Length: 299
Length: 170
Ligand SMILES: C[S@@+](CC[C@H](N)C(=O)[O-])C[C@H]1O[C@@H](n2cnc3c(N)ncnc32)[C@H](O)[C@@H]1O
Image 1 (spheres, rainbow over the protein chains, first blue to last red):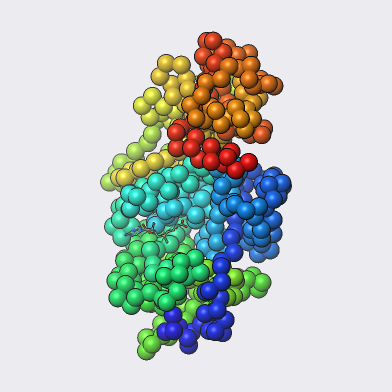
Image 2: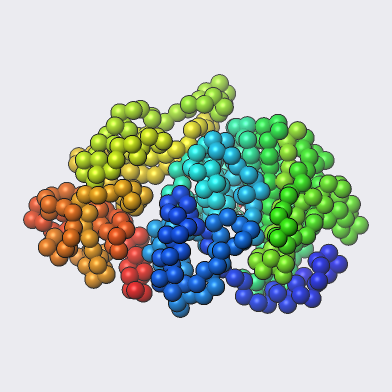
């Protein structure tokens, strides 16, 4: 991760944070139950939960009775989804409205799809796409468990997703080198191989371009990764700005959500000025995983 | 059906006819006491011998659809509700509920068959047919009572295994 020493603020705390366990969060599924009902049942079992002030429906799991919250009847019944707070910011930034037509281009296992469905109160239509057969199972199981009814699951390579829509909003939560998950997985702590970063960035560019092409003029695209590598983040969005009719929409974050701005240069590369309005979430700032989020408008 | 998904001049639609919705409305009302108004905001479509529930407003053509909606009811022969459907309807189900406890539910999930007299406070007359299995006041899935009053779980094997593990921890 040392290649990020100049871009990540308070780099020593960042590195120290990667060695600490990541807190667990749940998102209460209001498609099935009320927050009160879930919390009181879980508390009766001995879980201690604390509401997250800046993220609707999210609670931090402060303590457990000695087993995982995923091993409860209420998880089995789809009353909540275990989701980190950093990816939990993405669907609200997409800001889907009731009755809209939404595309989630890389959807498995469905954390963000089920969140979008919840925000839309099961109205409108979500096309949740996933090309990898092995990962479709988790997407199906999660949408089922959470009682999501407005979603159609499709299987396509997102880069060549068939002409359809046009969509009101498209989420492109791309496959990435996953450096932001270093607290969960030891092997990720040293940072990703640069060769991998380079090859995956090609896929990411293809996915973001296709997403923009499928969005209606004036529609919104959100691009996200769970990695720190600028080659997979700002450089991909910069490439899309140069090659597709789109512009950056500044992400407005509440003041109490610690985050950093997108980069406008990196190792000799210069990016469009507007990329400073994209956001970087660092583990030591939000006590979460890492995330990069850009919001664009199709012109 | 919206025209937004026109592709090469075609719009494909699933069969969302009102007849299917009527069957669902009546079945769940008569058997489980689910209010008919419950279904107003949803669509019901048919696929083979099954009726499915959905709320999406558009069905795209030319996409490779893997899955859409929630399987509600098998309509070949006697209608059979799915476990997910009964779970989803849990707050609205008032009749033909078989109340289990940790011991009886564990037995059922392991393939056991128990007489209805083992389930006090159940809201069924013990006649042959499908029932909703409840645990701690929540519907966990589908069960069946045979003509002799014997109760059997209809919860799919994978789901039953998961639930057994949860019960073991209680
Ligand atoms: C970061 S994960 C998505 C996580 C998901 N959005 C969620 O919130 O649960 C990226 C996904 O992209 C899928 N993927 C890989 N290549 C793809 C492609 N060419 N088109 C679309 N999706 C792809 C991966 O299989 C993986 O499931």
